[in-house]
Amino acid sequence: MMNNIYKEKILILDFGSQYTQLIARRVREAQVYCEIHPFHISLQKIREFAPKGIILSGGPASIYDKDAPLADKGIFDLDLPLLGICYGMQYITHILDGHVAKAVDREYGSATIRIQKKQGLFHGFDFTKEEIVWMSHGDRIDQMPGGFISLARSRNSPVAAMGDYNRQIFGVQFHPEVAHTPNGTKVFKNFLFHICGCQPSWTMASFARQTIQDLKQKIGDDHVICGLSGGVDSSVTAVLLHEAVGERLSCIFVDNGLLRRGESQEVAELFQGRYSMDFHLVDASERFLGNLKGVTDPEEKRKIIGRTFISVFEEKAKELGKARYLAQGTLYPDVIESVSLKGPSATIKSHHNVGGLPDVMKLDLVEPLRELFKDEVRQVGIELGLPKELVMRQPFPGPGLAVRILGEITPERLEILQSADAILLEEIRQADLYEKVWQSFAILLPVRTVGVMGDERTYENVIAIRVVDSLDAMTADWTRVPYEILARISNRIINHVRGVNRVVYDISSKPPSTIEWE
Ligand code: XMP
Image (cartoon, rainbow, N blue to C red; front, side, top):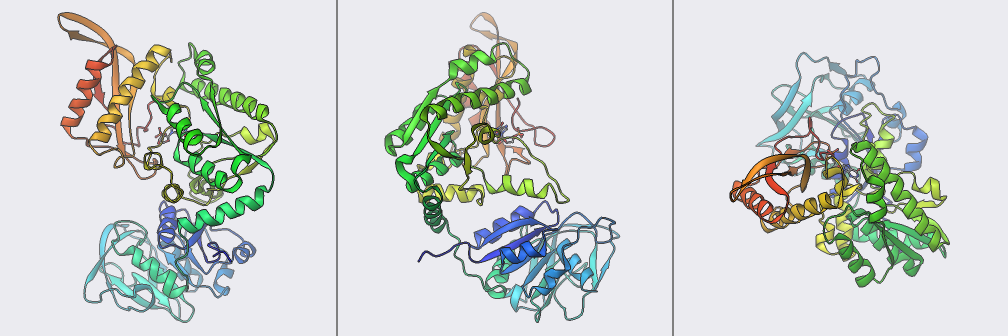
């Protein structure tokens, strides 16, 4: 009998904290499956989900706000362990008739707490030492509900953590999910293993095994089509499906002519060569470039690329015929974002997926990665034996180099950018930075500047270099690439790429800038 990795689950109720996804990551890293749902999920749904414990996230609201987010009080009658973090703890206090003191000042940043009670949440912690934790709260607990005792104190609050051992309800004022709380993982592990009684069974090897099994069942004798982009998500999706249904999977790779140098050959070699998949490379570069001729507006470019992609893909899929399913590499963060639209934080990020395809094509979707975070997908890729270069590949936008050629896209300008980008990537890899940074790429600007080469005055293109550090692309900072490496990149580009006489380095963070220039 297969070990069911979805059997032991933790529910995370989202009250709108910017850190909610981090809570889920910490739980998953402890090898326990969890899902994030908005705070207003019904009791009925919670019962169906059947978690072994519930974590209540933080959030920007005060419990005294008119529209303060409130979960169904019935969660206290489910006889399940609860852990409230920051606002989650204040919510617990408020509902169970303790008292939350309204903030005079916000406490924000690093603080120290002293553990007073080692059972349960702080199992294995050292009493005698101060613990460093990250605080970010306004209101605080000034009277615990009946049955609770204080488990830790800080200089600013006598109740930095509290617990009711009978009912197995706990609260922490600090944020154990952020890296600035060095022993935060230990707090989660204690909650999961000692309090909820979970086992660490969520591993990517077991995920891969179970998913292949599930896909076999779901797809039966039908056929599946998968669009490959060369990125890690669609590649892992394809390999999982290939393991499940073999030659009843057909992969379509559309070369839109906007890829990096050598990319389509690499993808073909891997999937057609090594995996012997039913792989179809459609070289549509002329069609894309034809449709983009004369277009300079970035939104217009995106629309044209999206539309052209759908037509090309649809035509090829029709030609292959007989498929019932369309596979997509949708990841968990895309799924959560659409759920929390209903919640208070409503962080909306719409771009990126090739939306529209399933509707047009009347195919049922299979999305085997929709429960996974990016780092988990990479881990699955490694389990499945995908090459490390592919698994660790930096993100690359769907519209490809089109968002990095400002102004008109012509074959000549593409050639300039591809050459410059290839040099940049080679140097970044050489300097062992490729996997350390979030993205590193070149941009071709729509201006020309004056230069001098030999005795000649030149008037040529400018290449901008963008290298950024980020955790999730929502925020990013420019990487402090050592000067010597920047110097080599600049020298090589100017000396070898015809049509470029200047290289500049982008030193803007996101926000207020974005990662891509468009
Ligand atoms: P921005 O430029 O918004 O980019 O800071 C954030 C991240 O998203 C990537 N990006 C895209 N990815 N299709 C994609 O698949 C797109 O249209 C697209 N636009 C931006 C970008 O490379 C960065 O990692």
